[in-house]
Image (cartoon, rainbow, N blue to C red):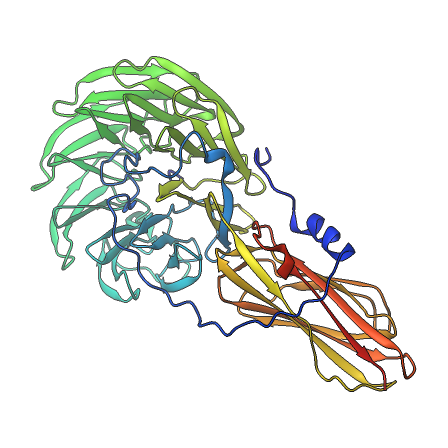
Length: 549
């Protein structure tokens, strides 16, 4: 959905802590028991699931969240991150939804992705014909998502298989913009109908099971705001400057309200019988949901407000230009504001259990006290360029970071994250002679229960040997190593560089040449650590010794 500081609580980095481990390496006599590969199992569906951009209450507020709150959000830690699909163009970026233990999102690489919500591992992907910055909607086992190729897709939520697609105009192929028919809005599903809008100015209602067109309404210009559906009415803004209310069954116009500018990118929030929107004239509007009459509008000093509001407990939360606002829902009176380090903010806020979460183009994710605006936690995802909107489900915060350099990640943060790493050293042989090549394998097993992020393995060329070569294998990303030159000696540091799921292994293999004479004891030491807290540090070091024959 085109909606388009450092961490305040931070642990030591793996690279820093591992130095202490290397100073006190002790022998390990433990044997690692065989473990079965963790199989993906769907989580039980919960009313706390965030099924679409607005959430099903059209307020971007999760009233079911009980795990994360004001008291513990400052302890958020990175649970996992996955770089897959984290691409961006000037078109914007999709936001995640999470349903039944699966995270779904679109990417401007043209694909729709499904990740395991617990581990971040990829479950499936589906490739459309062009960019996908639409945020998916999931209902009854089906994922609905739009693409810039001019189609609205329905995919099997378990497999990603295409069930049907609806073309807004003649279909586009390849990297060619699909004219006015591109679908950048996020669909909304209600009562067996999927609603979405397209850049051609049309609002569509389709049979959610078959994709058959039920009705279509044409606004005065392009539509890039996502429809909100409440009480039998579809609310949607258009670049003709109007907010429209349409009969959800027939598409007939019930009313329209003209803002003072020809741009309404903001997707409406609906609560208390009121429609709340931002507009490119810098105003926030509150409209009577039944009649469209203006209840209040306020200008808070921004040139434009294109993000979508969140509404909870009588307060409207919305991003402006370098500012974030909390205003009284009944009057629009300013309650508090928070200054970000960014400019034009298109990320839309999410509210859960007394905390409001926002992404900023300054590259940070913020958690603020919803009552006071006080900063509770922040995480710097990278250089400026965070446009995606956050969601909170069952104690986990999800958000996508991507920038114009097409680098970034899908992130999951939660509290109480642990990953128990277990390291061994296995020599290729126990009988060695001067001049032999010997390979040491350093398998690192993540015993769980959570992902191990950014794992680091540190060792050195054993005394009495010289470096020959090194390689990496395993189920996570292969990673990189810094090492001495051929026939050299010294320290070796290997970075896994991604997330290592529970019950997976990552192995570094070091080959050295024995130069010491017979009778010399050759000792290899190693230590491992990750950015994820480890409850059992005794498993993180290993030593093995051999005697030259």
